[in-house]
Image 1 (tube, rainbow, N blue to C red):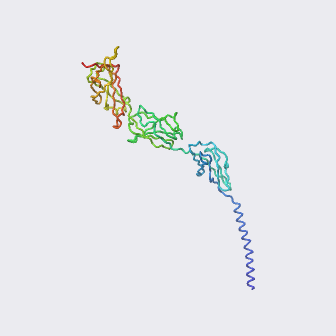
Image 2: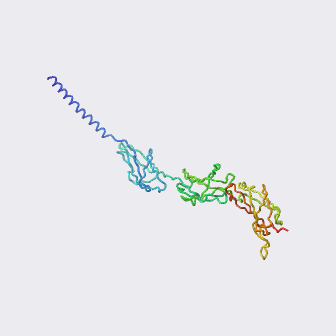
Image 3: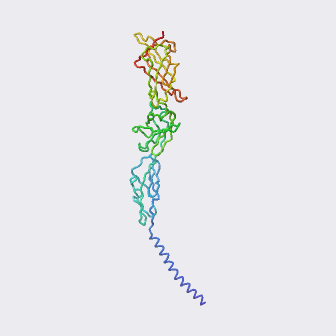
Length: 359
């Protein structure tokens, strides 16, 4: 019994000692927790309302930058009223919902409970759409004679004009060249484009054309570029015995030469020729018939063409008079384009060559 009383007394003493100490411990811990300040100063979410047909645009927080991606289809506003969520206990300035300038000079400061400050800078990024090329106004061009055409499509002017580039590539060997465009008439859907001057590096055939706007490039479109007209080949002609009477049925010899980068398409490539003969005028009309005579027995060498002047036309009508001009046609470099060449007319000086009927 005495032992039990002693244990009971000691037990009570232990309880009396332990409980106050426990209360004191928890009281101190609670006080320390409540008085500590949180160090968090982050922007958790940043949204801008009124983005085209959408309710809002959420920014991307990267480091200390607030990246706001904006579609170029919608005008970039000068002001914005963003909705901002920051870390618990933190404050932001300017405050969420305040109207501020929508530029890369706008700065936000987030202050944590413990007073530490973090600075964020707004960075608008305009999303530049990829340019779209449709079929050009014509799919057949000609060096020199028809160098202008229109490129049609969308999103041509989503950046400044000095960042727009049009260029072509020859499909056969990959040779590339730039094409100029008229900046004064440029629109977001059309560019007036011009082929460069024809040089020895250029050639005929199928080409691809691209449009590059900033760093974005369109899909290509295909065009066929024909050879320059024969007058671009620097052709020179002279008739042997020009100025002297020539009889029907007589052989006519024409000296010729080509010069320049277009010469390669025409030298030794004449496939047909015809003479235009006009009758001798008098008060009662031409003495003899007038018309174009196709020369069928033409022989072409490196620098000469020779043929016999027919005696009659296809209708067996006797002809005679002044020879006005000689028309020649060159062969196309591609067999599947027989009408590729262009007729060239050599005008005889002062109509001096005279043709008379045979004796």
